[in-house]
Length: 180
Length: 115
Image (cartoon, rainbow over all chains, first blue to last red):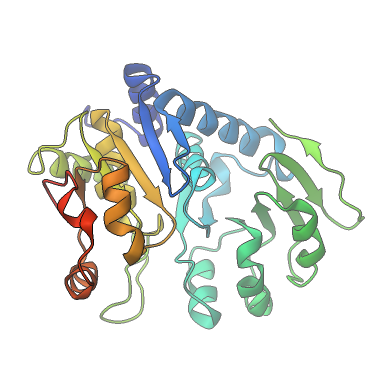
């Protein structure tokens, strides 16, 4: 590989080279993404982050973006999307709880966290200890996420982006909008 | 990426794109990873293992990764057979679990050649 290639460019090159070959298979479901399919998801997520989510907050100047998610296509797609738009991904161990979890999120002063409703309880438990976090982007379960988001008091915006987008600020109810 | 915290508080490490690519290349050669390989990774994507040691070398060589959300002892050998897995990262704790588990038919039917 070229010495200066980025992971975003690498994925693009591999997708062009390997196309419809199977790339990622989820166990136990067997659901499979091809190289081209993964590249397509990544590009959609990257465009969504840059242009459509959270008022366009995510761009090269956004610095570090935390990810706390279960394994799956959305995690991979969002992880490589961050790489494509030149953001630093902060990988958060989802088994962490309490002060150790807050420390991990706070060390890099992340404003944005990519997560899922499965982690709302853990985040709610430390809601008073997340001084920098302002935007939570979750996937699936938008309505449930909206209902529970109020427990994470310091967040000013919540966006569910897979497959619909819901932006929540001060005026419920959320209005789902197609993002991609 | 954070260290796991085995010997103390987790440390945040700033890893460059180049570091990731060189790490993957250092897997491809010694492990003879090719487009015909199928990797199996049930470990969290926040860990360096699946991100840089399993998925990235596979992306670079055209093979396939089987990704699972959490290790399952009862499903381990059956899934390796079902998905025709050829290699996986065998963490120390996984070795102990597999060694202590009762025999199952699939443990003799898999195609794993490296771990």
